[in-house]
Image (cartoon, rainbow, N blue to C red; front, side, top):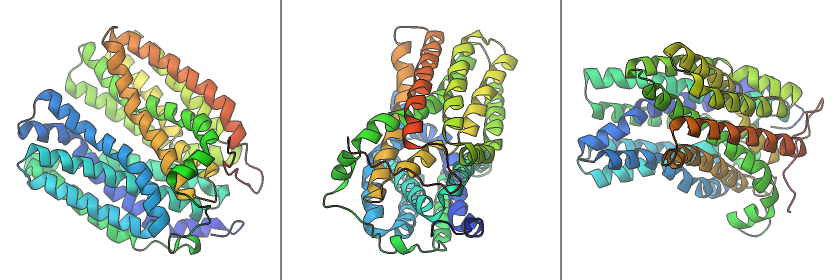
Length: 409
């Protein structure tokens, strides 16, 4: 897309080919995620082993981030999206039909790899396809579509488990992935990505990351902290609810209401970022997380825990797309896809590190101390983002000229 064109028309043409596959695949993902550990238990895993198997999708995504950038660079986003959907479907079918715990575990890891490749390709495509004037809204809508899908998915999964079998949920996810892949074929081809071609100096992924290490070690750390806060919120709220004597059904209701608040705010958040700048979302989000984590130990009833969960859902919802948008803002012209692979690695490291931090702190301290410590980390993240977001993503001008993240350090 040429900068300066009326991108509102072009953006509408992307609704089905970009957001449609995301909705389908995220519904399948949402259906499967709650069942991975249960399926592992059915295959003979211990509780500890089942927890490790459930974590393999995250480790698969970590392992796939950098290769995903290289694949998108070589083959272009459209072909990589289709391939990722096919691999995703294959992994789900293997998981549905295997009687072997090691094979099931490998399928879940490969699923994580496919998720990383699909996510990178979507991110890279929209970063190029949409004018900077509408970038945050486009990417926030992408994040919001994913949230809606993962909200719907567990309900579909519950019906399938009740009416058919657990294996049917994995088959359903495979069907969603294949449907998403077919829908991806309708993506308009971009001239710069027709063959995965983009200007680039000699060298591979590590050379690209080394040239742009300064932005990765500054703003990249900021998105790591955002991702850590988000992932930790999903872990600590149910743990705290259980520690206060709430049953599983009440906890699920609290989480569902929080998720509904989360889903309502993705487009307003993107509009704020496009109109006023990225800082107006990044900084308030981390402050809201800091407040939520800090006051969570004061909540002892379903109502108060629910209010805190909704507060953090508010922060999470309005920041939908912030990591994607900042990545698109700072991605260089040379090695853009490979750079985005490193950028997404920063975010996925946060997704893994956040819940891990809870585990480490609770080895020596109560859960309340862990929550307060996470509040402090979130406040630190707010300060870090306040320092670096204005450097790399200043307030948009009337016709934005995005910074390229080219400082080589």
